[in-house]
Every structure is written in C-alpha cells, then in structure tokens.
Length: 328
Image (tube, rainbow, N blue to C red; front, side, top):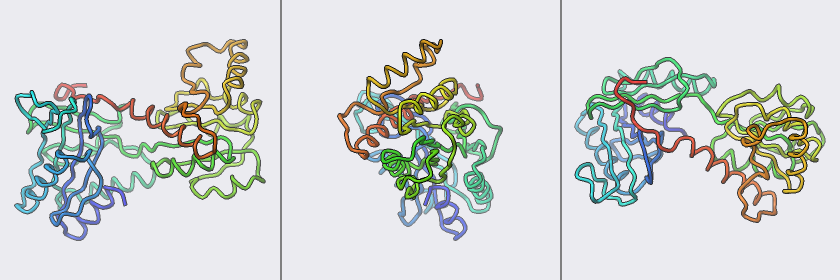
C-alpha cells in the first residue's frame, strides 16, 4: 500500500495520521527529497525519511502532535555536522535535510488526497502544494520537486504527482524477463516490446504492465519523450539493436541503454558516426548497458542494469535546494 492510500484510509476511518516529507537535501544525508512516511497516533508507520536518529525523533514529534490534536505543520532543517551551531541532527555524515511534519485533518485534507489518488491511478499529472496553510493543487511545472523557504513558519513544498517512471524494455528475452522482475520492485511501470510472438519469456512475463508486439523498425512511435522514460535495448541481434537505437538517439529520455559486448557496441557506434550521428547524441547512450560487475547470468546482468539506472535516476534529484521564497 502506498503512502497516499494509507493516509486516505486512516482519514476515512477517523484515525489520526501525520505525514513526514523530506523537502530539501544536500550532500551526504540518509533522506532524499521526496522521501515520505505516514505516522499514526498509535505508532503505525509506513515509508521512511532515511532512518536513524532523525526518523526516530520526527516520528516521536508526529505522535505527540497527533495526541495533542496539534495540526500546525512543522518544518525543520537538520544539519549532519557536530560543529553546526544550530539544527544539529546528531549525525556526522556532513550533509543536510529539511523535514516537514504535516498532521492531516479529515475535514480539510481527505478530499485533496482522494483527488491525488485519482491522478495517480489515471496517470495524470498535477502539482501538489503543501504549506502551513494546508494542501492544494497548482499548475504543472518542469521540476519534480520545489521548496520555497523563508522561515520555519513560512514555506511551501511542491511535488509533481503522477509522473510515473516507465521502463520500455525492447526485447522480451531472458534478460528482459529478469529486468522486469527487478524494476517492478522499484515501482516502475513496465512495457515490454518485441516483434516475436512465440518466445516463452515474453509470454510468461507476469511483471510487465503491458506487452506489445510491434516491428522493431516501428519502435519510435511507442516511446514518447520524457525524463521519466527509461529505455533498454536488448533485441535478439545487433542489426535490430541498431535499427532501434537510430530511432531513439534524438529523444529526451531519462535513460537509454543498449545491451551487448564492447565490440558490438563499438561497431554500431562506428556505423552511426559514419552516417553523421554526433558525439553529443551518443553521450546519452549507456552502452554496454549496466555497471561493469562481471555479470554473466540474466539476473546478474539485470542487477547491473538496475544499479546503473538507480545511479542515473538519483543523480538527477540530488541536491534539490530551497529557492528564494516565492521565487522561480
């Protein structure tokens, strides 16, 4: 059950619940922007803001607020440095994070959270705003997260809701099957595409949300541009890999990777360069796909790919800092 559904269920059952959200982070810190927890007065917990002493402290703060029927939102910066003169977290990893404690109110927040769940279910996009005034929706903007800070009583957190990370796995073979299994655990929406109808690994892939039969030379029309789209090229042969890659190199994607040996990758790149593909276009390509961990089996290869994807995805969100209050 996700955080929002859990929170909705609590409010519908007149059960007190508070949200803990990491709204700002920088440097070495256990909690990254967007990390969330739901905390009930009775001590039921779902999610994480990074664990450790910070999480324990904020869970206690949330339970005390709920027991006292204190619904004023709290925003506190935590600095992981013993030399800090204020807001020391008790940790020594050197970074910082800001955590919002938002006690939810059934008569005020339930409608908003229900609408938010509809957005997620329908794969729509909307911006959720949280401030001391409450929850609201605003117009869509490009950033996944934005935090505007003036004082601990004057702040605003914004998060794009409904932007689902989608994996397009082009090739429904053994590695595609293993990769689907791992990405499903990371809450990716998974689409597997192949032009072969007879392979068992494609038919038996129960982790894929969608399975499409399409010619490899028509792949482009199925993959839209988006920073939330991750593409994995792993067709049965190098010719099909090159056909697919030529269609996707110009697209703005969160990740584009191609499986294969170094010699195969070099040969395809040479073909592309000979046809005028620029070095800048090729810089977006991860090939050979995955981290170099000497992987051999389909699951080992899938693990190396997922590790590279996690690194790429999280690097895009590291260091989300506060903006000037009501600035752009």
